[in-house]
Amino acid sequence: MIGVFDSGVGGLSVLRAICQQMPSESVIYFGDQDHVPYGPRSLEEVQAFSDGITRFLLSQGAQLIVVACNAASAAALHYLRIQFPAIPFVGMEPAVKPAAENTRSGVVGVLATPATFQGRLYASVVERFAKGVQVLQDTCPGLVGEIELGHLDGPKTRTILENALRPMLAQGIDTVVMGCTHYPFVIPLISQIAGPGVRVIDPAPAVARQTGRLLEQHGWLEESGTPGTVRYLTSGDPEKMNALLEQLLGVKAQAAKATWSNGQLTA
Image 1: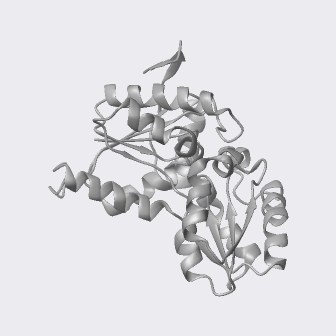
Image 2: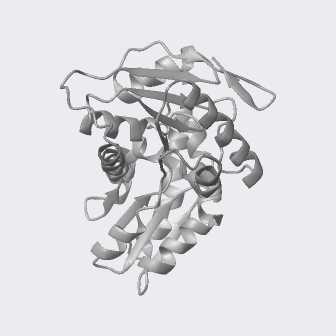
């Protein structure tokens, strides 16, 4: 079983890619909506949440963990690999490399939360792969909250994205990278604002492919052809999660409640 977690529903964009590429795999998804967003939180807080969620997912039968959250990957992925050396982890890395390799204008934009931009992972990716390319950044304040409310095309969402993208467009971007797993759900609006000349990169399919490679390496890849099961859990309101599952993924499901107590999760 694959365990997938995010601060909220953003990681559903990664879950969607995993289910599309590997429909026979069973997945347990946890959205920590009680603590969303992770982006503005301290490194120590995000590490503590990620540790508790990992222990919970392992207790539920997960063998591989996908950290489907850019902020948690930046703050806690290295920490988790040290804490759980026997467990394979897949994290999120801003797709700066393909953006830099394919830009024609030499100017790319990255939309992400503050935690991602402040992390060593992002700085390392830019330093290694974006030499000679101008990388513009915006944290899109408030966008995660709007997506968590299901406001994918509301006036506030549009204003946030226009404020982020208009200055980038004025400087000549031809590629924009989704550096937060929530943001792929507003790609239609981003494409509408940016226009057909700007390529939008969603890293979720690449994360799903890496998940498949690790499953294959460990001999865990399910090839029966039987559809896998997906369980959804949230630390927030299950009814709100159910509504977002239908809106974002088009699935009708009953999310279960998981509760934090003294740094531990119980279902």
